[in-house]
Length: 304
Image (cartoon, rainbow, N blue to C red; front, side):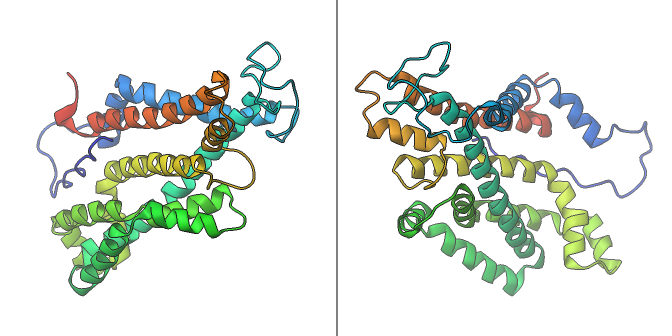
């Protein structure tokens, strides 16, 4: 995905002598509502999220795997996305799968982001022995083949849920983000406003979250988008090889079932196209939104 932007410039140390400048938040909003990439990406994500949240509530049955119709039926007025080989409603599975896909992305991305911020901020601000220890921990986790670890964990777990899957994805996907935050914190900790906060007696975490983090807000937001999309891709990969949740349904599990029961060979395109398109749309929309945010936050990339 797109390169993360540089953190916001240092806050001015004295009053301005000219006309008052526009507030950074207002300026960013001004460019955000005029950026087509950001608007398209965010709109698509919101639409898919709304379908995943509202769609299951409008169904007669709460079980997407229930056998409700004729077997291997093409899309029609009754079953909008057709049915599977076993007579399951593909539309019901799709809307439930969207919800599960967003859930694993939020859980995995949020856990990874929290760990990355704690490790990155602490290592970058404190430096010294603390930095060496946390950097060593980050490098150890970074070189561990995360997918192989997830394969082993999922293979030996008797009951797997979307939340548990997101938990393990988050615990293994934070190192690169922690290194990026650490590098940016190094560059910000020597700024004048941080020195003033330190001289005033503020503690480490107060300085980090009151002085440093706000100047990296755009950087952190885009980092979460990358972690969010990465969690969805990892979860879909695990689902496709049969190591997804043992209960419920997800877009990756729909692809796995379609492949297992030869939907492609049987010409049942309505079984594998919707989940594949759903995953592609979510991750693609996140990528487009990320590019748009990069242009909004980075003046050098803004289109005239």
